Image (cartoon, rainbow, N blue to C red):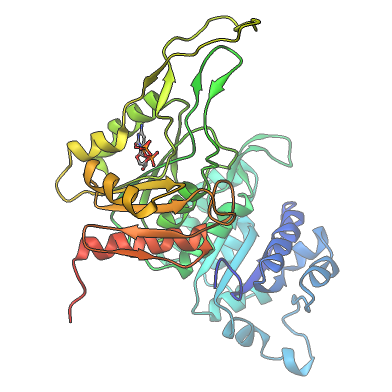
Length: 403
Ligand code: CTP
């Protein structure tokens, strides 16, 4: 099942002004077909009415430890029993302190103390409260118990100050949750991924580029991170947010991409070149806008460096090189040719003319081609396709499965 669909999340909301953002997070969980049950502290219920959360989740919201309703008498034990994970957002300094000291003086802290499932904490508070040694000590203590933290962001806080302590973005919390449900099989590996198009400028107003959206490369980056890898993503110009917990290097031209890749390739166990690098660039750059002429103009193009071929020519021992081949015809032949010519371990071949496999769509159907065989995957989301590519990379690193 993709994403968080079907996952049962116990969602603890505590008393910070950021509690209103939790309502939006709950909406995102419901939209994704996760099953969320909300437990609020008394202070959270002062900021946002429990009615808001029950209307959004379509379920009762829990906050009273001493509720007499028969099905709630053992709520502190039962609530976490059916859940896959606990998400506490926003988590105040008070709740973090409570949890760090094993206190059980409200329903949420009691539920968490009684639970044996992963807990994700998203702190949100004033930056002085966050940096106070007591809070930092509590965070370290909870981390040592195995609790997962989503770093708060920096920016303007509700109190008017600027600093650390803003509730993280939903994207960061979602990625943390997804990583709990993913295998840890890329842990200890650094993966370098390129994504998106490159742009080759003609004049201050115009450039040559292509239709790559970067979605496949970003899906590879997110799934690798979830599986425990350290990820470096070299991205051409794309309309996608930087994924959390990933070093993103933004570049524009093929030359810049080459430099960014070559500077970092030596540290990578795996390099995946999913970028659609422009093969050519204008031979000259006009400092001023080129004016139209009645007879039209000729543009001279010169060849860009082939980054993948360069990596293939100076292979580091043990490094796995993965290339992409986006083709409109003779997919198998072209994939095979590039596999050999560029000296790579794996080519991912796809059809750019297909409606569900071309540029800027959410799905892809690829053929994974190595020196022994070519296997065509079914039509999948780009994230599912990315996971299959990582499975294949791991299989290549570990050798053939033992009989
Ligand atoms: N690639 C690269 N540098 C280039 C061109 C391509 O690193 N200047 C990489 C792409 O990132 C991809 C693979 O090479 O992983 C194949 O790219 P593709 O555009 O399909 O092939 P080309 O080498 O451009 O070959 P052709 O123009 O013959 O299709």
